[in-house]
Image (cartoon, rainbow, N blue to C red; front, side, top):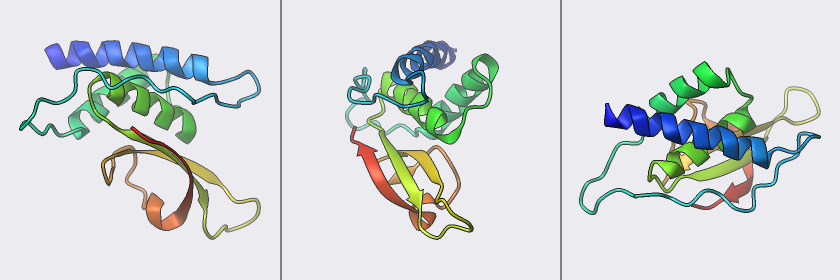
Length: 132
C-alpha cells in the first residue's frame, strides 16, 4: 500500500513538472529535471517496471493518454521522484515512410528502455538525452 501512495504523490509531482516544462506553443524547457529522491538502497536492486505501471495508471486516471513526449517527460519526472536514476531520450526516425521524419521520446533506466516496447534504438536516432 505504501508504494501505491508514493506512486500517487510521484504522479502528482510529475504532472506539475510537465505543466511547468511545457510552454504555450508546445515547446519544452527541460534544463532541470527533478532530483532522484531516496534512491535504491545499496545491495537492493529494485525492478523499475512495477513503478512504471503504477505511474501509468495514475497518469491515465488523472491526465488521460499523453503524446509520446509528454508521456516520457511525465514518467521521467515520476520515476526520479521514486528514486530511480532514469534518463529522458528524444529520437528522430531513421527511415521515414513519408516526409517529414517523426520524433519519439522514451525513458531508460540504465540501458533498459522502460517506457515503451517499441524498438526505439533500432528505429530512431537519438538526438537528445537528459542524463540522470
